[in-house]
Image 1 (tube, rainbow, N blue to C red):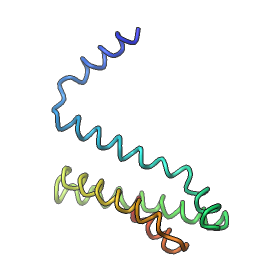
Image 2 (spheres, rainbow, N blue to C red):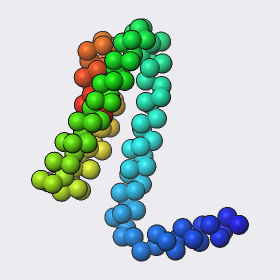
Image 3 (cartoon, rainbow, N blue to C red):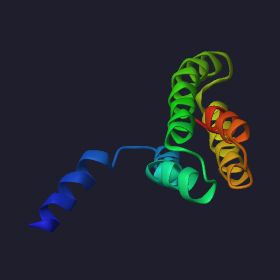
Length: 117
């Protein structure tokens, strides 16, 4: 049964270029990094000792950043191409996740969350 499903997927996606597979793998790793989002409010309230309202503000900043980033990403892709924009976003996103761990105050976490998303 599983072999049949595997062969179906293999047949459907076998025509993709190697670069598409690499991009898919990198995006999978990047999306795995967003696993921190469900735990962001717990981190803010228990480790940084923010109130629930302040943790909500941090998550709102992440949401607003996502909206702005989708618009900006489209504009940058039109100007520089998809490869450069995706490569830059992955690189900068990883760095910003590391920086986020060093932020201690509400303003710093909000700004970092906005830019990160």
